[in-house]
Amino acid sequence: MKDAFGLPQSLLVLGGTSEIALATVRRLIARRARTVWLAGRPSSGLEQAAVSLRALGADVRTVDFDALDPESHETALGKVFAEGAVDTVLLAFGVLGDQAHDERDPLRAVRVAQTNYTGAVSAGLVAARALQAQGHGSLVVLSAAAGERARRADFIYGSSKAGLDTFAQGLGDALYGTGVHVMVVRPGFVRTRMTAGRAREPLATTPEAVATAIELGLRRRSEAVWVPGLLRLVMSVLRHTPRALFRRLPL
Image 1 (cartoon, rainbow, N blue to C red):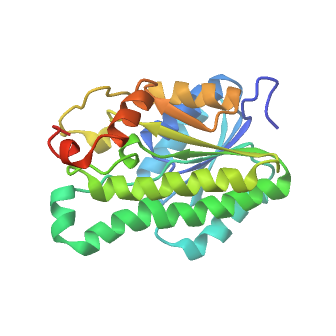
Image 2 (image 1 turned 120 degrees about the vertical axis):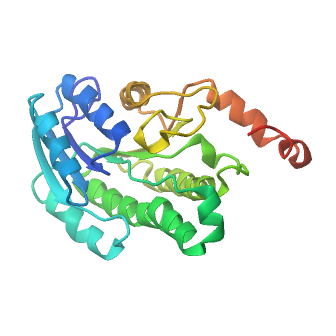
């Protein structure tokens, strides 16, 4: 169960090697989270993440999970919930892709969409049903500011996040009043391994800053969190910018 401050004591991370997810877990362990499940493809990175979190005093376990294999999601997540209640599920997997290459290779573009959207729809619904069955819990969905409006530079990635964001909002509405809370997190450009080598964008942030915002959002039971907060205003302006003008912007 969550503590008196609304913070989780048990976590399931879908995308167990995500730098944002791991920064969030470290922060929540410091706030008394004690049981952590890291779900992802078997790898040395997943095991190393588990070892590093165990060193902080948490009971950390791993479970095989593949976003691109929706038929396995029921079984994978079922193993976790069979061991006990989960206070918070953090849906943090995703790929950035390579816009220039993906435009020329439709199969690569489809893989981005299947990972970021189709896989998330499947895992999100399975997790939501399990949380609803236990009568409480939060589902935190890592979206992106890029999903607010398609940019020439990353419209394949952005469109997949737009779909995910809309799905998560609708799921939150569907679960309203059931005891299950859905929170959408919309960071801007995050400095991680995934974005290494890319030009730094204005209002860039860090995994630690996103983790701080997630913790605050959980305390407040927020439905949407922007990181940094100023992005909410910026994206509101861009969303209403006429298309002819938007095309000319250096985005």
